[in-house]
Each structure stands twice: as structure tokens, then as C-alpha cells.
Length: 214
Length: 214
DNA sequence: CCGCATCTAGTACATATGGACTATGGCTTC
DNA sequence: GAAGCCATAGTCCATATGTACTAGATGCGG
Image (cartoon, rainbow over all chains, first blue to last red; front, side):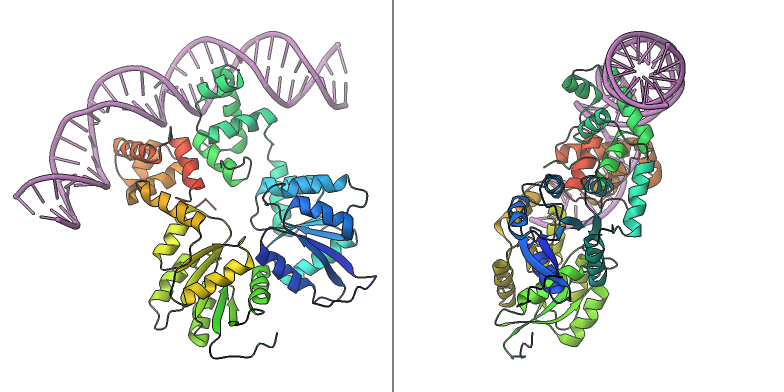
């Protein structure tokens, strides 16, 4: 553990709420020459403090955390004076999460099932200014872009469909006519290429278009 | 890292497809006196082989893995000559997964967000024949038991609802009348206490009653 | 054997849904 | 200013869905 601080080491800050993962990345990365783990945070808030203190080169972060989400953390970092490069390391791939992470400024996106060697390669890549997105993830992202995206209003309505509201209830909740709610839902069904509101709801969850109810 | 093999050490086999988690548990547990990690497997099949070779005292396993699932592994272990104690360590809690894991013979159930100390305590507990289920998990399990469970047929039909099939399509697929399919779905809606098939579908996913489509 | 749950099937009726349209006003973009 | 997208709203109509019943067959535990 007594890794000497060398000026040329890539200084890494870990952000993950799982103690197991922090320990795993810590022990895995600190044995690699040229890498140095300079800290570990379990929440986004804690991460922001440590970034100021430690000025890491690379931030390795999970998206799903209690409190501030990884996406919010990514956005917050961009407004800081010396933003580290950011590499997302998360468990499950949802098209929407990937998209939002990249949009929020992440330089790389990895799954926790990634082998050690590739994690190291990705850290080195983003540190030197390159991006690192595995082909499989890139393909999902591309598909997400190609698929005509839902409008804000449609997403809003889709969330209500997921909650099981009827067209009438949706119309009432949004103060629009039932007809309009129905029109939006028909657009959603066309765009998602599904056969009805129920499949639209499950597809929305599967693709991460809406957050799951608590 | 040169932990001496002591006869009284609790010998632990790790089963997880995430290299990061294997490394994390390995480094975390091998520093604890009285514990010894005797191997790590990335699949259920590999785990079965290592169990025969190493005869571990405790198996620390994830449920979601490529190939054989953790549940299948738990069941397979029970038929073996010298079954280790089993402790499930997984990321997300789904009522149904917890239930099935306990039913399949797991002595303990932990989340990956569990602090190190509790993981160690749980290992020691299951090794000495006790069970270890955190209160929050136990509460969810209890709720699951109280809620009148769906029948096998209803689960089968619920899965089709999740896929977006209509009552007619479900009836045809199962070679029963549309009326019967509809009756089952109405039972499902009553039991899950939801307002329609769409909410039933999303509730099913949220509660882990059905597997998400690929 | 009785009671109970389950699966099956049906009827009848009210309501919800989806498809195929038209149309208008606001807004951005070229 | 023309073109396009979006949100809004509507009509018509066929079909799907949910509710409230009844009821026969089967199997299982007491």
C-alpha cells in the first residue's frame, strides 16, 4: 500500500458507494506501475470535496449512488476550476444512462464486468485525452441516437403510462385533453416500435427511458 | 498476501463475474485474521469444479452471472457431497430474487453496498451454522411472503403481459380461451393491487416477478 | 369424503385503447 | 417567409380491456 508518490503517476480518485468495489479497484490499480489511487469517495458530495483537495487526474465513478447521482456529479465537475478526466464504471448498461453520462461529459464508459487490463487501458486513454468506449457500448449508443428520440412531453407522458395511469388520468394530470394524451401515446408507440402501452412501458424501463418507481 | 494456511481459518470461495468485485473481496477478506480466500470463480460451472477441489467452508456468490445463475448454483450445491455454507452477495435487491435465493438454500443475503465489517460478520455467522439476513432484507422478504403469491400459471401469463401480448394472443399462445387468459389477468391485477395490465407489468418488473426481456 | 384452490370457460356490459385521419397555433431553422 | 417540428384538439370506428358474475373439472390436504 505504500506506493511512492511519483510526479508522473496518474492520480485516480474512486467514487463508488460499494465498499467492495472501492477495495477491489484500490487493490487492483495500486499494483499497476504509473497509476496511483489518491482517494476514494462513497458519495458525489464527498467526491467534490476530495477533487478540490487531491486534484486527481482521473475520476473513476459509478453512476448509481445514494444522494447525488453520477450524472449530477459529472455535470458539477465541469464547472470546477481543474476538472479531472472522468471514466464511468458501472454495473448495468442502460442506453439512456450511457447517453446521459456521455452527454454530461464522461470521457469513457466501462462495465464492472470489464477485465482488469481493459480498465487500466481505459484510465490511460482518458488521461491522455482520448476517449474510451467499448464497441458494444458504442453500438448501443449509436442505436439510441438513430432511434428517433422521444420529446420531453412524450417522456413525461411515458412515465405516467409506466405508473399505470389511463389516458384520461394523464390528460387530467397534465391539464390537456384525453385526446391529446392519446395522440402523444400513439407517437410513443410508433417511435418505440411497440404494439401497445404495456409494451411501451416495459420497453421504457428496459431501455432506461424512465426511472423505476421507488 | 502470504497468508499462512491455518487449519482453523474459514476457507472462502468467491463467485462473481466482475473482476473488480473478486479483487475487492479478495483484498478485503484476506487481511482479516481467521479468514482465507481459497479461490475465485467467475461462473457457476467454474465454481462447482473449485468446490470439489478446494472444499471451501463458505461460498460467497453473486446471483447474476452469465451462464448458470446463482440460484441454479445454489441448488446444484445442495446435491453435492460436502456442500459449503452459502452467502449471497449481490447488487440490487429484488424481492423475488431474495426469496428464491433463500428457498434455494442460501444461509445469508447481503448487498454489495454492505460495509466490510458486516460482510465479515456474516461470513463468520454462516460458517458457524447461523443465518445472516439484514433487517431491511428480512422485511422485504416478509412482505413478499405476506402478499398472496401468484400461481405458476399467473406468472406465466404475467410474463406475456410484460412482453406486450394481448389477451387474445396470450390465449392462443397457451392454447386456452381468451376469456381464461383474461380471468387470470384479472386475478393478477387483484393480487398485485394494481389498476391495469400496464401497471401489473411494471410492478412485475420492479418486484422481480419476471425476468426482463433480453 | 369434504372443502379449498386452481384452471378452465363462459356471458354481459361499460370503458379504454389504438389507428387513421384533419387541423391550428407557436416556435425554430433555413 | 416557407418549411418543419411540436403540442394541442378533435372525429370515427374497431378492438381490447376490466368488472362482475356463474360454473364445471381437477387435484390436494385434512
